[in-house]
Length: 310
View 1 (cartoon, rainbow, N blue to C red):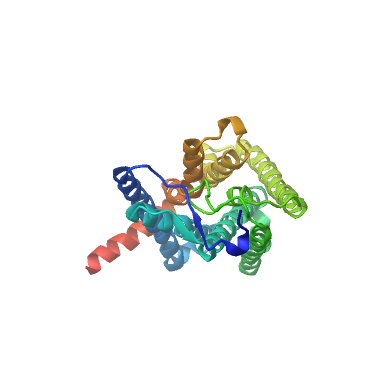
View 2: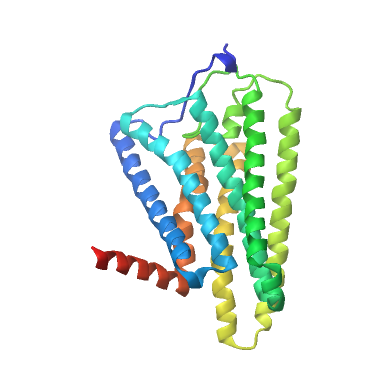
């Protein structure tokens, strides 16, 4: 038996049993990470360079792209390194850092998605008050609150998780450091702090979810009353990408963490963890750019300008 003070490294779950499959997973992860880096990088560049995109919706979209980049850069590089070199090790410090940044980015993304829902609600349901309720200062404050809340949320969870004594080895059943799998190694019987944090987290997540559902009920009520088909189409085109991103983020995370024990297996856990930690950051730029003509036009201008320069 060992405790957390004697643990110098953790052993992550290998993505495959053979070297050939490990290399295949490396190529897949490389492709996904490059797509995420390219897509989110283009969104950040387009919003930063396109002055006509300096609106609250695109400002929050830029922040969302930053969290997506953070999520993909937190888990994927280490998984690619382990697949390429056929190893499972991650240092204790590396595990702490990986867990902190993953929770930080995921929590901040959820708060940003909630704020973006408020942006859509005000834009469609209270258009006359849009400039007042979502001025540049108000948007900056809301984004700062989202980032600060994600930081505090992650700090509390990371400090609590690694303050528990670990005496059930150092093998994690996941390809990255995740709270549930680290808690399985704990020999502490005092789960009061973790239960309290989980209760607060549950209330926070549920509160944001209720706000999102309530907002979209009001949004769809207003949109369906718009007399012109063109007006309804324009309103839906700004809401559907956001709704799709929220659905993908919440559904994959919920299934991964709240699935029944009967569904639990190494393969299922691996697939679900990839779905909620790797796939959304790669798909979000595609979802937003498909329905938004302004964003597509700006991205295309950036790309053609780069090609013409070279």
